[in-house]
Length: 248
Image: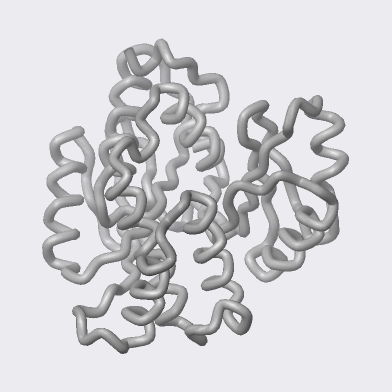
């Protein structure tokens, strides 16, 4: 995929971005739980948690939900533990896919994702089966706010930024994983409208599909993205020139 933000833009234009409020809050809660589990329950002392809480607030998630998610991540509620699992495999027409999931039942999640792969003529593989096709990156998604590609790119090239993929709706700014926090702070200090910040995967090379093959691949990615345990979906499918007609 030419950037998670591009896929987000396609879904947004289709009117299908987490159409159900509960599904969105579930994904946001899991981000908070995982962040709290991996560090301090204090957002000011845990940068990942701080980002997750800020994102939840941007989507008007109730404060009580945020507090419960932090408590669960800190092991204070007695509920089943949420764990991060990465799934890899091939989708229709050979596209490589990485799914970062969050679940309290890895057997259920693996079975459901395997079903989706098979249903769409794909194969769920072993760990590392396609991961070598991707680089680990930090990603800042931001709104160009009407700026031209040149103007936005110039503004985005702060210290730590390695590449920029422009889209008039939401652009992707790439950093090394270790530079993500500092780059995000510099971009925000410069007045950039940031919509998301996360550690992700970026394909080293991309696959171009057309017609029915492209539609099949996009429908598969959409099915994965809508699974309640899928936090993020990455692919080597090139969607840089995809139009809504491809999904008709």
